[in-house]
Length: 336
Image (cartoon, rainbow, N blue to C red; front, side, top):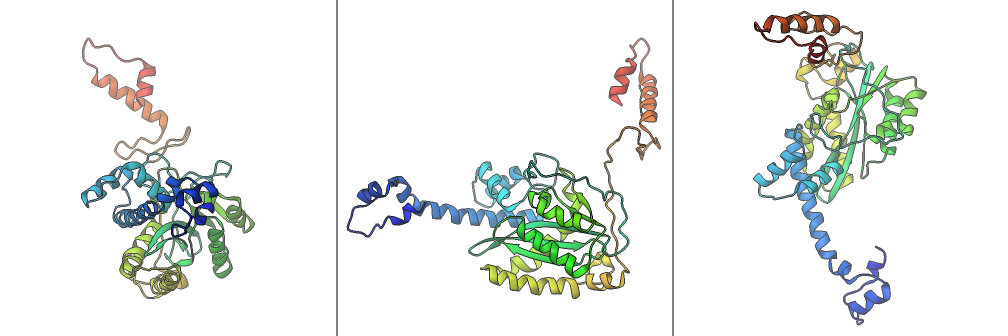
């Protein structure tokens, strides 16, 4: 890459001879202008994908390909997957995991399903989102309090390294104390030793979203929607400096002035300070059966795995027609 900069097309020495002397392929030199055009297309496609994903976060790469085609951009799925991976986006539905944790990092269980959040600093959560700029892009990380929806700290970076996430966490702890539970997704920034060691040092319980369960962290997802539609898309920031100033103004407005319907039209600052009017709970609509643990089934009132099997056996016997072979017990058990 450095040797390519040695080539000067305006020099008296022919480009072919310069390539021989520098040990650079002529195709690489002549393709530089084309590469810049591809980068500009990537920025355009990234902007369109980002805007559509904010409106429809359940869209995966297949639907994004269709969306781009409908707005006049024929793009293959591999490019869409690459752009979504760079932006840290994945459809909110069970499927292939596009944001894998580091293979050497420990992944912690999700500890908030069905847990009522009844006070400030009981649960904090974090996430990263992609923000397009006029000349490039940036990543934004934020930490919010679940009870009040207050943004406790935030940072921006031009890379997805763990260091800016750790800085954001340290600031929140230094300014607001510590939570009882801290929730994140399974991204490598949050599973990194540098990040989890800070939480362990403070004695905080670590919780991580289940794979394919993007709604486990729904409050941060709602924050991203508000940030982008109410600020980023309207102002079209060009540089990191402009973005920093603009987000500082927006988060001050979001915390201190913007009323929240879910908080009874109060602001996050008011709810966080008074500990009145907030709260949250993640209801598990699809509970996973654990051996020996009762699992309520709404329509039948059945409360255990054994009762479910008995009910399935009785139902199968009742449906059996005269002269028809009844299934074996093992078949019924598998069906249950």
